[in-house]
Length: 151
Image (tube, rainbow, N blue to C red; front, side, top):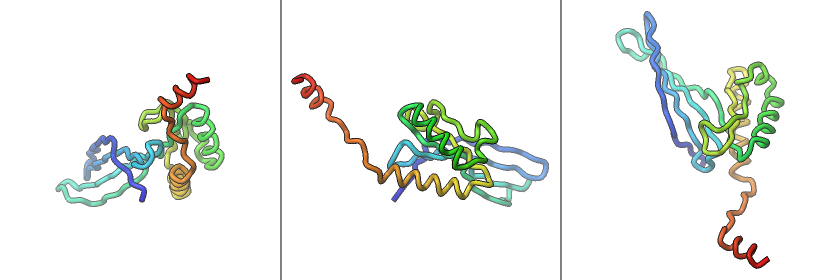
């Protein structure tokens, strides 16, 4: 079972004449892999008396972590090719130094309304591939040093 944990959260209140919007942005990180995450926007709309009118949740962007910039750039290029709509704005899909995840580099992909469903499926496929692909074996550094020393 894939689980996510909240690693940070911010909130914002927008007061209008007849209602107010309370928005909470939470960054979720995959518990099984620290290289995958997303930002969720939860919005609650209240009238002037404080009665809840509407509540919604929306994924704003997805994050994919990489150990180096070459892999991140390659993944971003692939995402732009797969989802042509991401090419409209430079900030829709960008490879950058990590701001959200624990990996050194990340690719941020905005969830645009017209590709939201396909992008969510792509996100799920990436999680599946990350969790079920052959992993790099953890190296016992002391044993490796001893082996190198003998050579």
